[in-house]
Image (cartoon, rainbow, N blue to C red; front, top):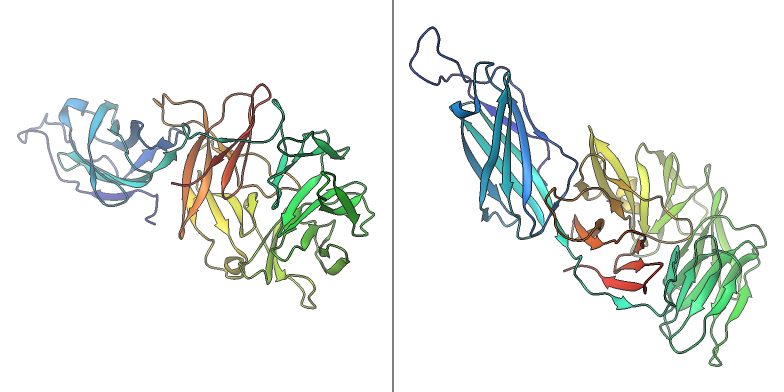
Length: 422
């Protein structure tokens, strides 16, 4: 991916008329030029403004300047564009390039300022607009809000942990079944469902009579951290200063000690390597049981999301927020940081909830003239790149996301799952 930093080419010899003592020299006053970040993110199908700033002689006016503008989409196809506005005040110049991205992805924007003043370039990312995509109704009573949500592998039932409330099993054509008096941590590992509350860690089975059986794995301590399900049916529990692996009907089968409390984790595709995040460090280790100590390194970025295959980190390049996705293999390498996508100044991610694997949900302003419903951004792994999707988020709704669905819970309407991707 080309750097979002501006590429600046300068030609410093030019004039706006015949040589004369009173003639204003238009050429660049000093070698500076940049893109102005207004804090908005572009959206597929919506008009987009990209603002460049540069300097000219203090005697120059906007009428002395002319422009050449070019925008190309991710397939290097031209996009119709124009300079919608240009201003000059005391040598400080500003030009607004306007275009309408028809596809998602990086658009390359080039602005040439004549006579021979400056050439400015930048990359602008358009997010895929999925705000009108219809969702599949969830089998939840109207008004139900979940802070953690897990789909069962068998009959399509769902586990819902209510914020500050209880954890309940919901199935079509059956009344809700309360599983815990509190907001529990949830996970589905292979064909096994897991629940962790203050009374312990439980594997769940669902007999044909419509009930539920809870089998304690022997963890009697107060609820610690989150759960990460493995395809084998085992679960990894993030504890106070360790990660422990549990097996239904058996109990603990291995544990690795850490120096800091882990709050997020991901596992490699072969489920042999575990990546954990603590407030100041990342650790890579063999999935328990193992006798090898973890390899840890400090981090300055913030972990804002997790999925079974990778963690999402929010950092910055200068003042520009950057979101990246990191796997266990990449974390061992001092060089790669995984796929990265640049956001706009002021964009942020909701705190990572404990006990549930959640892709980050990012909030901030969309394109300035965007007329669509209120939305949030959700990252999507597209090959080796990160793409962004815009999903509807009406005021008052709770939005969760995993790699396959965005879940929208409205206190005065039904809950839906919106499929992700193209």
